[in-house]
Amino acid sequence: MDGKVYLVGAGPGDPGLITVKGAECLRRADVVVYDRLVAPALLDHAPAHAEKLYVGKASSDHALPQSEINALLVEKARAGKIVVRLKGGDPFVFGRGGEEVLALADAGIPFEIVPGISSAIAAPAYAGIPVTQRGVTSSFTVTTGHLRDDNDPTSNLQLPTFVFLMSVENLESIIAALRESGRDATTPAALVRWGTTPQQETLVGTLENIAERGRDMKPPAVLIVGAVVNLRDKLRWFEDRPLFGKRILVTRAREQASELSRQLAELGAEPIEFPVIQILPLDDYAPLDAALAQSYDWIIFTSVNGVASVWERLGARGRDARAFANTRLAAIGPATAEELARHGLRADFVPREYVAEAIVEQIGNVAGKRILLPRAGSAREALAQGLRERGAIVDDVAAYRTVTTDAHHPLAQHIRALVERGAIDAITFTSSSTVRGLDAALNHQSEIINHKSKIACIGPVTAQTARDLGLRVDAIAQEYTLEGLTKALVLLFEKGEPRGDINSFG
Image (cartoon, rainbow, N blue to C red; front, side):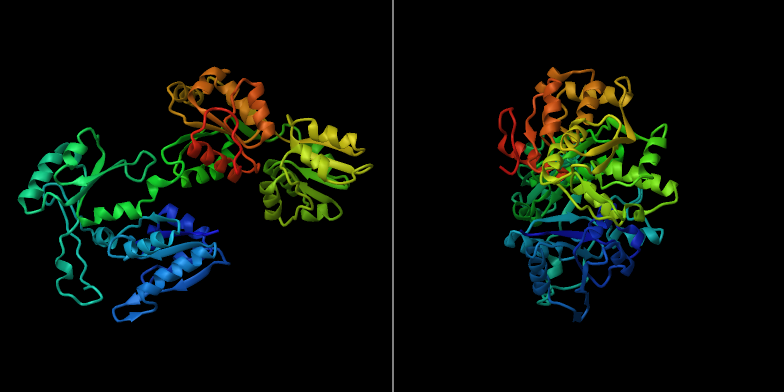
């Protein structure tokens, strides 16, 4: 499976001017391909395992020809790597980023563009020079001093690209002025509204028809005029993502919502976070502390929260991972296993399906074994009951508690209004507690939800809870993970199927 290439603008030199998204891409990179003008400190954002490849160019000293850089990006992505192509300034401002993206597009490699701060505006700003100033100048032109590789002295005399900000209200007069200055009616033009947001809208035409096509477009919008507009058909990526423009409700607790929101945003959605449950400490930790002081054959962790709570209590008692030296550890899914690994602990057992019933069926012979279940105080009884029926001695102890968001909370009222007017395309549930929490927060409005929004659940247990509360489930993840949930959403919207359960990966 191919990886992905992120063309990231590194900014003009000050490492503090990297964008938040640019730094995030670096933190996830397997390979960083970087230029001469990239601040060395930016490479520290990349993981220790990341391969760092210098391909910088000086006036007469190119570490790698451009054609070989293009081929390198394709090669690394085809090896399944996450590749960050780190370029000084902005990738599309004299950075030959367009050439690299064209090579990726021709090779069928997925890519994203992460704009950077160009030295064209940053250097003047750091020198205290504004490039525009009301009453002084209303425009500025940026030109490269480098000739093309063929040293054609006319290469810098090509017609420039014009970009007009705040252009919609005076669109016709702008176009008239361009025509009077000699621009041909067939010159490509594009209007981009709400650029870089999930509401982005792009209209393409020529100077002859763009005003008519954009007659109903409202501000804010940018007008782009020039031959580069013709590259859009090949290089468009932002609006082609599978969940582009979908507004999706994330109901996880605030501490856990960010990862699902990130995955949804990367697929083009606009995540709306509404934490319908809160993860809170216990009023009394004595039962948990007493349990952790005992010896168990197994400790079964059913959530990241359970791991975090147990680890916090061990630390509070002056203990560490050695407390589990003679105990086998089970995790109900990969996220819980990863949380254990973050504390230097390896799960001895992770079931093939990430539900309580799978642990009971697959854990092996537990007759006579002492098992600790540190989990939410309101957790389902199925796991403890199933283990006891197989002869285990189970201590089911609360490690944290969950509370639901009150229906009178201002955010609950806002979300309810969004749902009622059909402004939420889909609602995600990652546990039965999030289903119950949303149902309470929205005053049990299942009929309105069924009519206005699609429902996606992380697994069959969560889906059954939704049905029990009158919700009609549209998608269930086959793999009970956040990745599985997002894939189920993609399949749901790609197929545009009528309501009824849809299994992803099918």
